[in-house]
Image 1 (cartoon, rainbow, N blue to C red):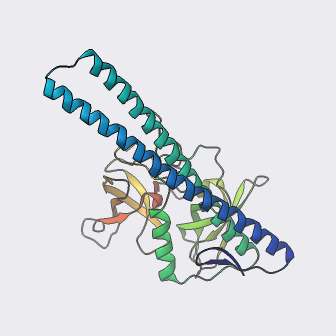
Image 2 (image 1 turned 180 degrees about the horizontal axis):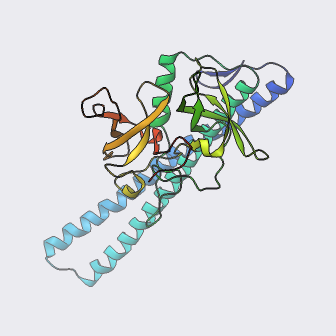
Image 3 (image 1 turned 30 degrees about the vertical axis):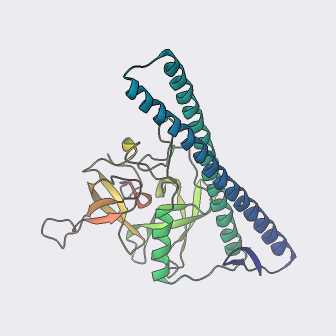
Length: 307
């Protein structure tokens, strides 16, 4: 066994697998050390910026006492505010660097998981644990934080992927598959690979109780969002109220048609949706919450987008 960080180990067997596991462990530890340094750098930068902000406050207090802005304080405030802007920009750069390291760590951990699966070390996950894992995956999905005037990119919130986009190995997708009785359902699946020659995906049902692998055309596979949208800064990257969508029904691994009832008001909140359900008098379920990661554009049974 190779320990990669506290509480985590990689099961290895054979020289080549062991060498790869050690390489992944080294990469992960390097990223963790870099993230640790960045967190301290951010704290140091905030301490410096707080000192400058305090000086700005003191300058304004002095101006209020004198009831006028002298040329000296005009120049001093200009200098202080310029320094404050520079401090904020430096802190932003450090935070973005830290977030990039977090994403690198996520990628390395995913690579480790895929390596274990390909080596035949795939662990069977109980259904309750699977539901918690899916919830955690949605809650920890990276939040898009754009710069001033920058638009949210594809696969952020409700913004669909580019037409030519190919989901990567290990990515979560919605897949239209046939069941035992030939009925078709949208399920949560994981990409195994994409064959460019046949233009088809190979995906695994995320529900390990099914243990099914499917080969599907691109029109039957919808990539899930890779980033959350912040309602406060990028409301256009969310589905409007009343939109018809596909959403993952709580405590299941299947997508069903639903109507957006309420939008999230913060980056941590979820959509409130009404699922189509003929067992209720009005044809819809009571309001249920679904994370951004599991709410996508409605598709018909042929895999085409509906408007």
